[in-house]
Amino acid sequence: MLDDSNAGLIAGYTFLPEQRGQRLKWVDAQNAPTGEDGQFRWLHLNLAMQPARRWLETSSCLPEAAIDAMLDADPHYHVVSTGQGFLLSLNDVILGQTESQRDNAGLIAIWVDRGQMITIRRWPMLCTDRLMKMIDGDFAPLSSVNLFLQLFDQIVSTFRKRVVNLRVEIDKAEDKMLAGHTNGLRTYLAGLRREAVVMHRRIVPEFHGITQLTARLPAWVTEDEQAFFRQVADEVGSLINDIRSAQERTKVLQDEYAAMIAEETNNNLFVLSIVTVIMLPMTFITGYFGMNTSGLPLTSPDGWGSIASSSIIVFVGVVTAALLRYMMLRNRRDR
Image (cartoon, rainbow, N blue to C red):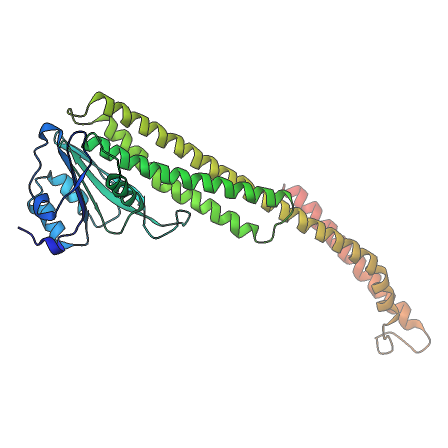
């Protein structure tokens, strides 16, 4: 028997038909559930605590594939389905961080069989915390599968809320662009696109997982619960489409921003070219009359210095023009 004071049991509940969940102590939780008379339980464990890990390995009576998946230290997605039950890894939002923060999701492994749901995590999670508050309130799940689907629905709702916030931020960025307020817009759009990519990367494996699980549920799952699984899979698919739409919008806005900056640069270069053309005659005249030709070769003090320097300038210009024309003709022949 493991020590109840440091076992890693975050929360435990036992459920009877048409009754609210009752808190479960670790001493009682170590007994395997029978799943009879509609009774089931939920154990929420801390993976960082060694007693909980040892109980899973030695006394939980779970399939070996499920135990390996739950104790896997690497952030991999797992889908396990046997006649006894099923396991799925899901992303939840780490508690204590705002839902709009990026890279704040962590994996939670969930095992469900006829008599229990076991969840295991490394950090405090938002949706599991919400589910515990619902159970402490008036929520009474009908079965372990119903409890799992409620948790999954909480996770999907959390991601959907983040997608809605993302779309609002994209609308604001689009309004700023149309109004010409481009200060800091490039970094802002890059952050929005990165958030959309991160959410897409996290929700797609969950869609594949729930889809695979729906196709190979254990035989004891009821038809109503199977229909609920299909409904949840459709909702996740719709959520993925919304995320992809947000990705495309941010990409389009980034392209428009790049085109706007390129047009602004071209306008600045055009103005600079006009100024250069206007200043060129004045520069030429001042440079020409500012030449000191007293020491040039083939010149004399009788005024031929200016003529000689002008001839050299014209000769260099003609040679340069001839070389440029020759290079242009050669490039045309090579094409």
